[in-house]
Length: 294
Image (cartoon, rainbow, N blue to C red; front, side):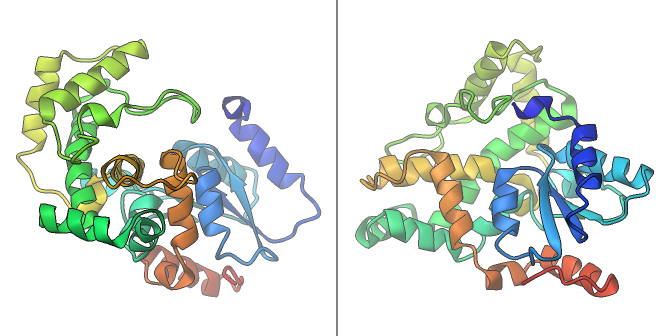
């Protein structure tokens, strides 16, 4: 199990690998590895998963303490660009948006994936009925969940939104987003769903009344949507849209993981080159005379 893989063990594995003389790119997990692995030059760059945002930072810091300088890291920005809680750590790079999934969903990869799984007629009918593109609808719904996540972080509400392990029970998005119309069922349903999910995880949370008030407080301010919404949420909503609302019969569409894997495959080099993350990494590559990309 990944929770037993310590930061020290990851650092040791890197330092003891005498067969590789290039740089290590430390990333959060397998999905990051799959995406960045499409673009980096594997003759010079080896990708190592640290299994968590904070753990990427910890591995980099430990390697630095040990005098090992052939390393860089990439992590999701999460809410840092909203809260101003930025990290000053040499060799650490942040995604343009909340996370890599949002970076991908903002590109033509989204339309490519939806077209693969759903009929053109149903896509056009949905967009016409809603008066919004699928991307606009996803971001609208993701914003509602994002507000609650930001409220929980800002006011320490104790809410839990995902399982401890990837194979654990997921939050039931259909409890607050209709799997027939994709309409948001309201803050009360959202709070109730997340509150019950958190209680089942045996964590201490604030009361639903306090949570509701804090959510209202957070909603008084405007935020950059690309920093507020979470890609994991949007992939779950997109699964509901394609599987339930648009009625995809494709057997490859089994859950949100299939959605995320498909988006990763559809995200191409031109998409990546348009990001600030690419430009920052390319600048580092030139400065250090390392061929980072293929």
